[in-house]
Length: 173
Image (tube, rainbow, N blue to C red; front, side):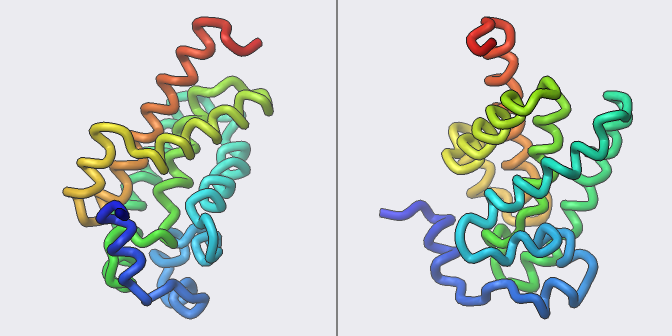
């Protein structure tokens, strides 16, 4: 009836709190500066946090943007792993640093126009929620900070490829 991941999250009553958020800097980052505390659709709210963060990087070179995003990805492995252990669920829905970093990667390959950012946001959320092959398989097997970050990296790659197809075919003007 429910995917295994949903059952694990439903079975866990240990919801993140403000107390956990401020208990350690790793939790502050992993919980998306508090956006992961939102009870409904925390992944969507976390993804929204990534938009203004990337906007701050618009004037940087492509290489610098990728270097920063790689650094944030590596930071996320530690932060998400530590917070997952504290919550008792490796990929708790409140852990949204993975969404923040992944949407920033998608935006690196997205034209700087609001309509394209909206499409990028929608495509990333689609692939992050849907988890087409092999994302769902990696999500099920990798239960640590790297696993939390990696499935969203794959969703970001799917979104980037989809965006490029839309751009190359002039599907959207």
